[in-house]
Figure 1 (cartoon, rainbow, N blue to C red):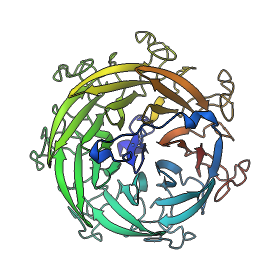
Figure 2 (cartoon, rainbow, N blue to C red):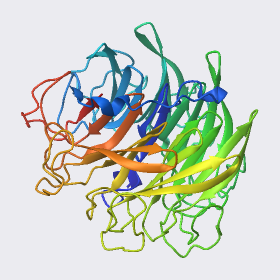
Figure 3 (cartoon, rainbow, N blue to C red):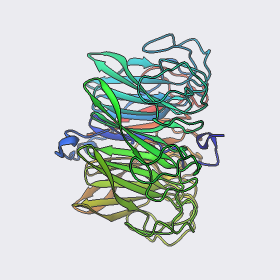
Figure 4 (cartoon, helix red, strand yellow):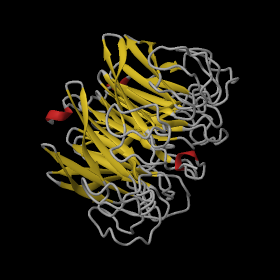
Length: 517
């Protein structure tokens, strides 16, 4: 079974991506990941505190063809007034744009829904399917939106083609994975490209995580198995199982091509390099939640594999068309099974979560040594000065609890950080409710932090307007300017469209997205 399909590996889905004016999750993971305005030129305007002045829920969003177990919201991506929501278990047999949503003849083929905002009103603009829709492909597992371009991953797609726009019809390579690039002209979406790894392999899971920044796209293949290290090494040696790889593609005009093949500097079995990716201009952060060194901090000893699945992050930078590794990051309190590695990058600031971290600390820069709250989760903030990275903060929830998975979704925009904890269990609804009531198991929560100079503070505690046990609110989070989108992929109402009936729980795990502004 794929790692993504295993309930025992809850920290592998960390999707994080950058979109036209924001970083979103992914994973995402994590999660899980898009670029802010003028990211490619290095000009960054941090948002104001507008998000917190009148913060309220603006919309409750469902699929136009809501179905049980569709997992609408597993991946989300927000760019200005556009929101993309993936439902990787949706089952219609439609292909392309705005096809027949009613035919459930392709089980878990997956779909993506695009919504747009005018004023304060959200409407669905498009319903997207793969050009080669097939059962089990999981199209929409990951989404990354950048302006008028949207990348969609289908990590279980099975063609044996390689590179760009190859043969989609050959299903001889199970779960090799693929990525589909769509572009918008006016209000019309069309598919621009079909991307595959340069070395596709069975179960490589290419497309599990994506990060799009302008004309550059990073795609992870976290179960790729070559023994290569660094940049553009030997792709043909499959001797290091599930070591993982990341592929960088660039666009010139309307043509996409692969620019780089990236591996960890300490490639290892089951390191799953690429369990999260976040791209900002010429900087790319890659998480490897299965990496096992006992190092702490920045650029420590990579060779000691004595702390299983502690996790690591690798930072790469581009000069011209050449990529090189700039840093190797570990938690300040590295621990076994902490799964450090869900990433969200904005300029010279990088947020990294470790959903398996176990300290009982609360708030900012608390005691990291107390491991009495298993899988409570933590987020570490790193900053770069020149080419040097240092840790700036260690963040925990204000109501830390075992199993909360704080950090499963992370999204950084300027000096604002959104952190999802899909396992949090309070029965509160809305904004800044009662955190102490743990009567709604795995309902989920989101925590908003802001930075002033170098000091981080928690500002808000968010819950769904219809918080319910098992909804997993906060699995994916996406910040763009003064807007925050949050998914709850196991929410169960049978509503369709925008602001429907939240109380009807007749469509188990159909999923929902919530927009705050």
